[in-house]
Image 1 (spheres, one colour):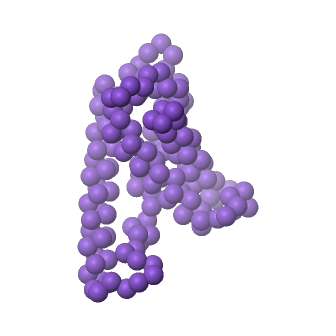
Image 2: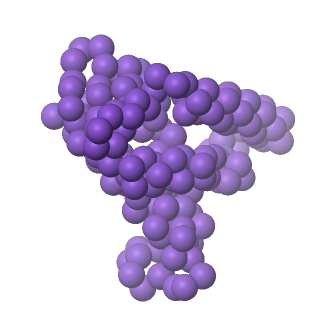
Length: 152
């Protein structure tokens, strides 16, 4: 994924065909963080913990659903990925790029959680969890490219 253009309004990247397929495969994993992972507080007890947690869970479910719809719309937009002679051009507005960073972060962190939140990833890697390791690493690679384009 190579940045072709960066302005105050949009970013344009070039992806070779396999990079586009990797990005789409990673984005298919959203949402990845389990709903039960988000807690109101780990240190104190809110006045009505069950009601408050239920409200949080509902808000997060609604946000995930909206993000999923927006992600599908972004990926189905015929002007989002434009074919060129060497692959694809991906154009993102700056707010879209920031939002996509959040989506990729969900996938990266969710994959890490599925791995058991290991301190040393290489010690935790097995044949069974290798897909989660791969997803986590690829999400991180795409995040790095977006961050570099956004912040130089």
